Structure formats: structure tokens, C-alpha cells
Image (cartoon, rainbow, N blue to C red; front, side, top):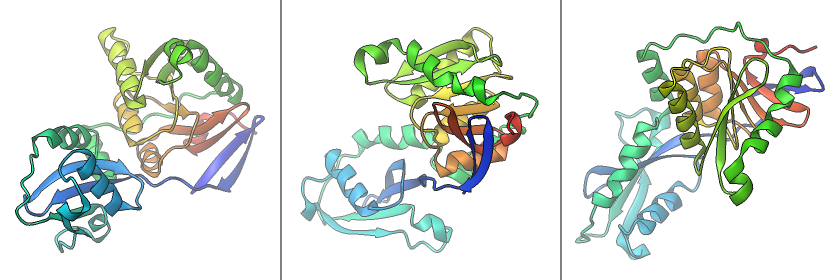
Length: 269
């Protein structure tokens, strides 16, 4: 994918590789039901399904699985068939599916399919985010150090993600921490909602780790024009940023970063 690299205030265009993010639906053939939907990078899908069922106590050994295959339903789009795994258990095996309900409802609520997630945001009436806000590379360079300095619990434990909101001058307004970066962003947006500080027009969001589909969904709802992270975005994150006009920045470290969408909001030479 083409990406703008901004380094020392200058930009150059190059090709970059992104980690693919797609949903995997795990179905049990005998029960005729979906037991989990999770976002993953394609590959080793059968192992993922088997490991999930074993770790959740649905099966206790390899022999409990009779077959694992991709979906061959002709009514499903060809590409999506490889995002559905059918697992047929051995005859007579009785399974308790109630503990698995949390996986289906939790993950499906977060947006299990890129196309479906974008369409859902369209149906909610979210327009393109206006490109009025502009920032300098120097301002963006200052964000990671501010984020790290404000991570009090991370500094004590080393085990938490953070989401922070900055104003147009690069001043840190609020930061929230959580073991999950999407939870940290929920806390950040929820705090702003309760204090009547939404939407986040003319603000910058920065998250630790990578920018995923969920991060972009939440940022669009909060009307954030610029989203930054210290790591890479996923393929679906970039697609969603371009769809709704978000400037998406990754690998923001030192005096360098990549721009995957919305270069027009950054002063460069």
C-alpha cells in the first residue's frame, strides 16, 4: 500500500506492507451454530479454531474433532468463505456452549467484518470528517513522549495500553489506561461524553500499540480528524480511515512517522 513517510519535516512516498485484519467465524456443524467470531490475521485458521475449542473446554483431545474445513456455502461471497471455519465434532460428543456466548456477543459487537462495519457506520449517518485541522510534524513528534510520561500505571506495571487526546497545540488533555487499547479509548471517549466535551473536532487521538478496526470505529464515532499510534495500523484500519476522511499516522517515533491516509492535514515540504 502507498504510504507517506514524514521525516525531519520532509515527506516522501513509498510502498509499505500492512498486516491483514479479517474476521474468523468458527462454526460447529453438529450444533449448527456459530460459537465465536474473532478478528485475526489469516493463516493457521484450522489450528486457531482447534486451539480455541480446546482452550474453552469444548474438546479435550484431538480425537474429539472429526473434520475441520472452510465454508463451501455458495450463498456466501467467495472471499468470505475463507473467513468461516466449520468444525465437525466426533459423533456422540456432548458439548456445553453456554460459556462460549461471551465470545460471540463481545466480538460481534466490535465489528467482525470490515465491509459490514463500514456499512454500519454509514447507516449511522457519519459523514466524512472535514479536513480543516492542520498540524506540523514537530507537534506530532512531541506526542509519544507526553503519552509515555503521563502513563502512571504503565510506569509502575509495564502492562497497560493507553489512549490520549491532544488539542491543536499538542497539549495533552486527558489520558486513560487499560489492559486493552480499545478499552482505554472507550474510557477516554466516555469521559469526554460525560463532561460534554464531545465531539473531538480539532483534536488528536494517540494510542499505544497499533491502530485496529475497533480503534478507527470509535474514533469515527467521536469525530476525531487525526489518529496516531506508535506502531502499525491494520489493513481494515487504513480502509476505514480513507472511507471517513481520517488522517491515520503510524510508527510515530522520534522525528519520523508514516501517513496512511489524510496527508493533507500535515504541513510538509
